[in-house]
Image (cartoon, rainbow, N blue to C red; front, side):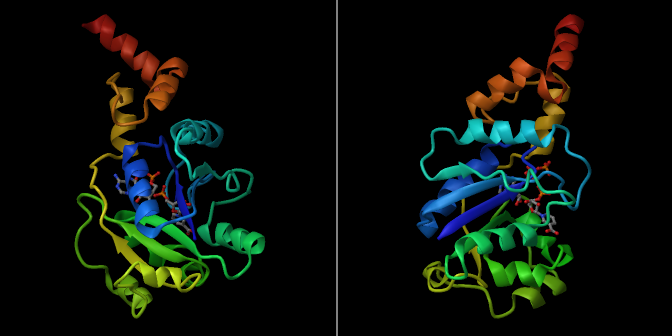
Length: 221
Ligand SMILES: Nc1ncnc2c1ncn2[C@@H]1O[C@H](COP(=O)(O)OP(=O)(O)OP(=O)(O)O)[C@@H](O)[C@H]1O
Ligand SMILES: O=C(O)c1ccc[n+]([C@@H]2O[C@H](COP(=O)([O-])O)[C@@H](O)[C@H]2O)c1
């Protein structure tokens, strides 16, 4: 079974990586692909380019066996719809390989508004990671969409290639890319929120406005 974690990753952080590792182990995934989107469908333009965000993802994954960067969304025109990505995996792997689309609870809550959400569920399982501040029951549209699909045990997911919804308990990390971008823009460190190599690149290249903000902070102190 293959896990797929799509995201804007602007930038990638430990709130992506640690839950992903725990989900990989809980599901016994053969591989977990990280898919940076080129154009996120439901939000504004990312701060950094798709190529830069993908390079940071590659640096974050470098040492973890079974984690891989998948660049397929980077070369596609238009919004990076997940259904298109899943169709491309099915064309490549066939109908029988288990696919798990992983998302945090916040992203899951928005699923009914996605492009062709029923086809997303037809093409893959949905695996939901808890996220701090995102508790509560699913809204009516989401509850209807997942009715009869929620798996009590993760082994159920291995018995079919797609169509189940599973909730996985993961270490809850109250980290978001938004808080990291805001900290960097103020000239504050992102160390220990992102992998060391990612932090080094952000500093070296002055990404997210870090260099200017840090210089200003130093000059005004
Ligand atoms: N701390 C976290 N815990 C669990 N899931 C997370 C966490 N951060 C992000 N995710 C999930 O990872 C996927 C990609 O998230 P994304 O790249 O948008 O990061 P983000 O931190 O939510 O970004 P932003 O703050 O810019 O919205 C989404 O499914 C999201 O729910
Ligand atoms: O397909 C859609 O309609 C759709 C709508 C919103 C988000 N997504 C995908 O969900 C993932 C997380 O999105 P985001 O905006 O939380 O980074 C990312 O891979 C997006 O392409 C997909």
